Length: 140
Image (cartoon, rainbow, N blue to C red; front, side, top):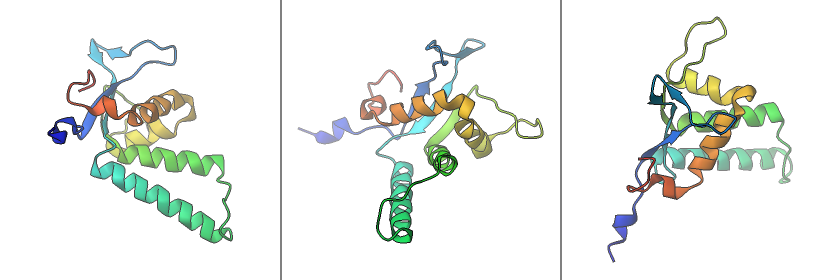
């Protein structure tokens, strides 16, 4: 068997559902996120960062598991998702002064907004399913 036929794509598209479970569209276009797969170099960077954070916390806490404050955990998770995001489709968010954000600033604003936590949850669930990144997947 040529096992390479089962290799996953580097990215896949997550079509977002609103908090009520309905698929989101903007002017007939799917609203969603292009995410890097668990097999991508970006995913490896996030795994490495998570491991380093855990080791650092344990070293600072006499090799015991350390409690991470919720605000700090939210920021870290948002930053990890920014690294795993290839792009947004039809998602807008304003900055603190009302100016539209773009790129990583946009991703960070969306992922760190607790009122938009349903987006973060969908992204995390999607990233946990290797099947979403297969060539025959409906998400590609």
